[in-house]
Amino acid sequence: MKSAIARHVAGWLRRYPYRGKVAAWERMAHWLAPGELEITLSTSGRMQINTALHWQRLMLAEAFERRSAWLVSHLLAPGDVFIDGGANCGFYSCCAAGRVGPSGRVIAIEPDARLHAQLATQAHLNAPVIEVRHHALSDEVGSAEFYLPPEDIPDGWGLGFVSLEPHPGWTPRVVPTTTMDTIVDAVGRPVALAKLDLEGHAARALRGAYNALSTRALESVLIEVNDRRLFDELRRHEFDTILDVRNGFVEIADLGTLDGAHTDLALLRGQCAGRWHRVQHLSHLM
Image 1 (cartoon, helix red, strand yellow):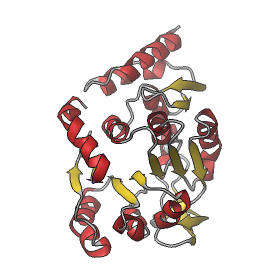
Image 2 (cartoon, rainbow, N blue to C red; image 1 turned 180 degrees about the vertical axis):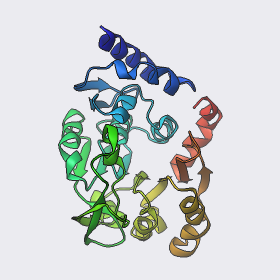
Image 3 (cartoon, rainbow, N blue to C red; image 1 turned 60 degrees about the horizontal axis):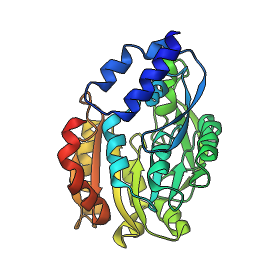
Image 4 (cartoon, helix red, strand yellow; image 1 turned 45 degrees about the vertical axis):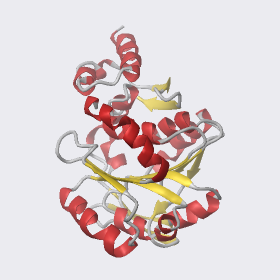
C-alpha cells in the first residue's frame, strides 16, 4: 500500500517542480518496494527506474539534480541534437529525448558496462531518438584505464563515481575512448548542447571538442563539477588557454548547487543562450 502511494506521489511531483520537492520526496521514497518501473518524465521522455537504488528513486520524482535537469529540458527544443557525456543510467538522455522529439537525436555516452543494459532499455523506450555509445569521452580516440570505486558504497552510488582520473584503491578497467569532435562529426549536423558529467575529466574531454566548439558545430556545453577547486580551475583557465573559443558564450555558474558541492558551469551561445534568456526568471523556483 505504501509503495503504491509513493508511486502516486512521485508522479505528481514530476509534474510540479518546486523548491521543497527533494525534502518532500525523501520522506516517503523509502516506501517504494524494490523493482523496476517504467515512467513518463515531465518532458514526455520514457525511462526505466530501478527503485532499489536511492539515486534512481530520486529520479522517479525528478528530484535528482533537479535544477540541472530543469536547465537541460529548457535549453532543448524539438529537432535538437543532445550529447549526454557520462550518461550513467540515462536520466538526462531520457529527459532530452522527450524534449527533442522524433526529429531530434540524443547520443548517450557511457563506458561503465554495469549500466549498459539499463541504457539499452532507455534507448528502446525512446526509439529511435536515443543512441548509446559504449565509450569514455577524452581528448584522444583509443583506450584508457577507467577506475571503478569499491563495491561497498551503499545504494549503488558507486555507479555514479567512475572516472578516467586515477583514484588510489579503485579498480582499473580498460575502456575505449573517443572525442566529442569524433561524435559531432559522425552526427552530421549541429549539436545544440552537450552535458558532461565525467568526474574530473571534463578538461581533457573539452580538449577533444576543440574543432566542434571553434566551428560552432557544438553550440553549448553544460559541465558538472563536483570539486570547487576543479570548477575554479576550469573556469579560469581551460576555455581561455586550451580552447580559446570562449568569445560568444554566456556563462552561468552554480545553477546545480544544492549542497555546496555539486556545481554546474554552463557555457551557452546561439539558440541555447536565447532560450536561457527567456526562462532565467524562473530559475529561482528551482
